[in-house]
Image: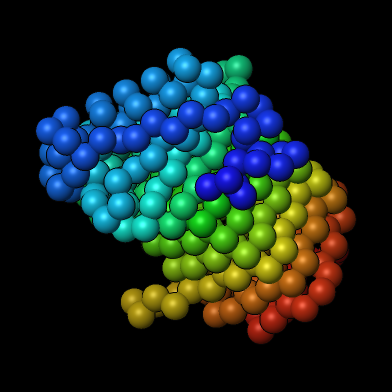
Length: 288
């Protein structure tokens, strides 16, 4: 963990030092059946109350939560190998939210190699996301799998200075990653595939930039649809139609086998730059 927390942009530079464990005891069911939201949320709030830190999950177990988990500022959520947080059947809420979606939060981190599962197959509200951050800044998501949101895998609205690295987004009902009114949102080695599972085929994408999203970009974006039931994910990367996106850059990657095409640049004011080595079997649509 030191290599993630340290450095000029690390969370330790913001005063985050403590580690708070989600204890594997009688308070935590950790069996994928009982409600584990209370112990996890309690650890998160205890962490925030003490100035921030890391909330560490339990390796190799599944925690089912009966409601949303809220992340205050300066809190990191560590998902170790084999650790899964899954939304319970029928709860129809976002799985992870930042605590203050009006004023915003800063210094958030979700990292590790575990999984966040929105359980879309057993939730009927198609407007809920696995991670829903609004007004968030100086934040990162690293290494984890984010899957099966009823709508987006990750929704970043009015966020800035947010970075995603080595993240996998799959089996989400709509877009894998959606950025709205965002700037300085960046990603590297992002893998977004087999999304658009409940939206109309071709209307949702691996990465979607919308409504005045400017100065964002990614390195090595891999976005495709391999679903045996028929390809549904629209574009690998899309700047949405007439949404006034500008100055977004994409450097290298592979955008294969999407239902509609590889990249759509059609934001009206778009001046996106495509650089480096791209595999674009579906071609380029729009006027960069």
